Image (tube, rainbow over all chains, first blue to last red; front, top):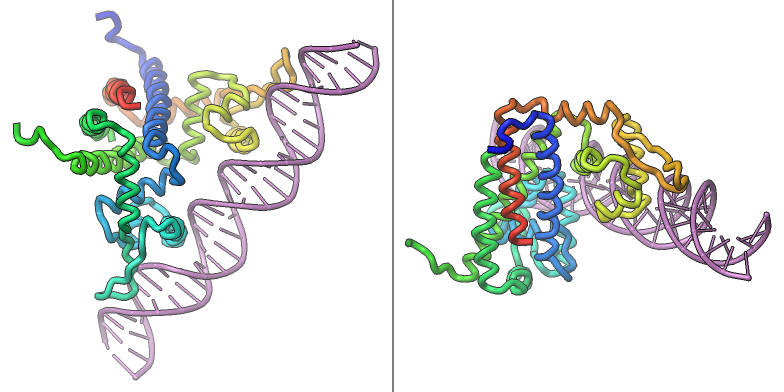
Length: 139
Length: 139
DNA sequence: GTATATATTTTAATGATTAAAATATATACT
DNA sequence: AGTATATATTTTAATCATTAAAATATATAC
C-alpha cells in the first residue's frame, strides 16, 4: 500500500482532473457517433429519447431537457425540417402535439451505429452499463 | 446464462438507453457540484482546467473548448468580472494573455467541494477514476 | 354557454458564438 | 535600423439558441 492516505486537497485535485478527462471522453464518444452528420448533441439526444419513448409531448420534451416550451418548438422544427421526426396531433386532445420518429429518423439512428463493427457494439454496450452503474453511486 | 445472444438492434437500443441515462447522471453530478453557485458548466470546467494548468493562454483555452478566440475573450471576461480569474501579460511576449486563478478563484473551487464529507470525496475520486478507465476503452 | 385552464406556437428581447476587422506586439529579411 | 509579414488577442456585427410573455387553439368546469 503506497498511498492510502491522500490529503483532501490532493483528492480534490484528482477529482478535478478526472472530471476534465471524462468530459473530454464523453464528447469524443458522442463525436464518434455523430461523425459526418448534421446533428448537434441535443438533436442526437432527442432522437435517442424518441427512440426510447416515441410520441413524446412537447411539454415532456421541455421537461426532459430543462428548457422552455418555445425552445422545444424550435428544436423540433429543425428535426422536422430534416424529416427525422414528425408532429402528430393527439386525437383525444387536440391541443397536444406528439413527436414521432419518421422511418427516415429510424433509419438515421441505425446508420449512426453502422459505423461500428458488431464486436465493438457489444463492447460499447457492456461498457456503458458499467459506467452507468458507477455513476449512479455518486449522484 | 439467460441472454448471451442479443440481436444487434437490441444492443443498439440498450446503448441508446445507457447514453441517455449517463448523460442525465453526468448533468446531475455537475449540478451537485455547482449547486447554488453562479457558474455555468463551461465556467466550472474552465476553472477546473486552470486549476489543473494555471496560466493558460487564450489560444490554448480556445483549442481546449473548440471555440473561437473571440468566445474565449467573452468567457474570461465573465469569470474575471466575478474575480475568479485574472489576465496577466506574458513579459516574454506581450501579445500573449495568460489566465490565472485568483485567490478567490482558488477559494471558490475549495468551497465547491466543501459540501461533500471527506468519505464521499474519497468515494467520488475512486469512482471517477474507474469511469475514466472504462470510457477510455471505447473512445 | 361562459369562464377558466392547458398545450403549443409566435414574437421580441437576451445571451453566446462566429467570422472578420482592428489592435498590439514579435520576427524575418534587406 | 526599417519594412513586411506573422501571431495573439480584442472588438464588432451578424447569427443562432433560448427565454418570457402574448397569442392561438382546444378542453374542462360550473
